Image (cartoon, rainbow, N blue to C red; front, side, top):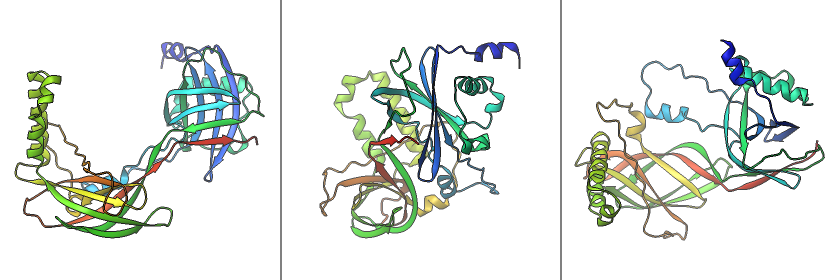
Length: 338
């Protein structure tokens, strides 16, 4: 460490606003510390931090283990679109979030909290003895603000959360048959029975569909021959790695009694271990969009692709409905006065 580091992190705020409001939701506590103004206006929120312990597994993990270890980052207020302090709107331009574990070595972070205390912030009792390894700080940039708003503790705070999705691991065994339909149900995170209808299972010749895509005359109107040649090479490199010529992916069209996005994986894939590809690192991701909006059961028709290579004469496919995504609409939260 040297003095240049101190010079970089030493900030003189144009203004500081202390909020000091604790939010309790779903058995957890969050704390709105306050705001600062320098080049930009910032809003600071302390949240719980769920530290993911590294898996102590011998050998190379299979795809099932890797997928189950991968969790969506859980910053509760990072993706908010706006805050209201009373009737003053604070539009959120962007933000960052990170663990406070190593912030004891960050002079700028220490200064922020000390300056907040000097401005009147009192650390709530529940937060006093909480270890920083169990906390994270979300910093939101507020758009178009040259002056911090007025605030008093009796003002209501309203927070608008952007639309999002929640991922739920299921691991339900489902055997699919090419060209055939079937129905089944599963119990979701809320204890409800969700009815699923597989309308169609098809084998997709991804090489053929890729070649047809590049024959589209509209592409030559948007890209130069050199750009098209490069894109074609990248796509074929990805196909060579992921789905050798002559093999197929599996397309699934389905309906669901709840507005869930289903993700299927072949059991073969889940048991296998990642391969190291030499040379190109390109990859291909496919989506299946059904031709119709509504399925035979009157529900929204959706599609997904199992990106495991199968022989074109495959008839039966052992799979798992590995996880589903639950759509969360935009919603508003009102913070009441303590």
